[in-house]
Amino acid sequence: MSFEIYKVVKEEKIAEVAAKFETTVEEIKRLNPDVRYFTAFFGPEYISALQDVRVPAREIAIKELTEDTQLVVGNLSFTNEARYRCEQTVVTKINGIVQNHADTKTEFIVGKQETKDGLFIKIQMTDNILQMYPDQMEETITLVNDIENVKSDAIFLVNPNTGKIRKVINHHEIIFKWKKHREYLQDKYAFIRSKENKENLEKFIEMAGDQILAEQNLILDYESKLFHQIFFDKYLVTNQDLLEPYKKTFYSQLFTGLSVPLEFRQDLISEQEHTIGVRKVGDMPKNYDHSKLEQMYNDKFLPLIKYKFSEFNFSYRQRDVINTTDKWIESADVTMIEQVKNNIQILIDYKLKKIEL
Image 1: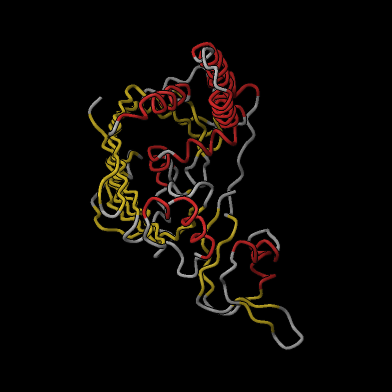
Image 2: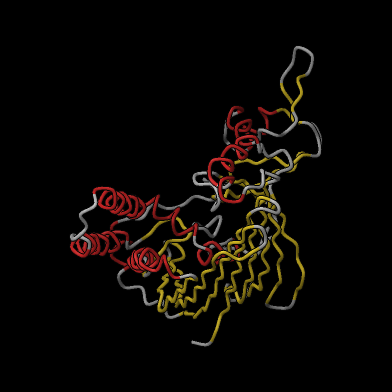
């Protein structure tokens, strides 16, 4: 489900807001745990004025894909193409000292085609170079990279309201490639005798399969990748409301399984006839509950770092140049920092650039 931000200018009944966005009072409350409400004397509940409320997006009707549409997809030409190069550096520091870093260089060819059934995007990864320092994890990195290659060629149908991925059109092809690759992995590592190592490999293969075999899981996996996260956005489908605030959940790289909600604002920093420059700033909500983090830190990092838990923070900064006429992103520069202040930090620097075909 996609969402939008609704500004409550003056007090409104929760029930009226819910009706306006075709949802329920309970859903409004679930989506907005931090919004201030009040109850009139023996009357209905109201939302206090001058607040931003997260609500389900009022979507235009999305047509179902028919069998004829599936046949047409095979004839898409994707003649409107662009080439992108992306470079990512991930650095881990403990007590301010670099412990490891990974450099990734990736190249994509992206094709677009509009049809009566919607906007289709084809993304083909043509190069993927990864270096890890130190290189003790080279075997694991290679294993992960090979699975990424299975998912590297995909055709997507775009959501006409949000610009996000609606459907993976060639999902069956990706599943077929995964099944062949799974057989290859099982044969390659058949020599493993250690019960623990064998179980770890089987668990890894099972998790990778879960991501690929269910289409919704595969979409979530694509959307977790920075290239897809940046490329699939509202500019693909409209020039309206490109600067609205929004919320997005990220997953911690320091604490396994921890989700971190970020609140984003968007600012227009430049504007020309065909392009705009946009700055996105994402920060944790001020009332984020840190209580469970200290125990997670004590279990995982305290024996190594020695210093006690201080303060957790996760921040996201992005600058884009978007061609609003041709609907291409021209460049993007992302910095993400996740840290327990003064103790441990993961810094991600990601650069995307559209280059000549």
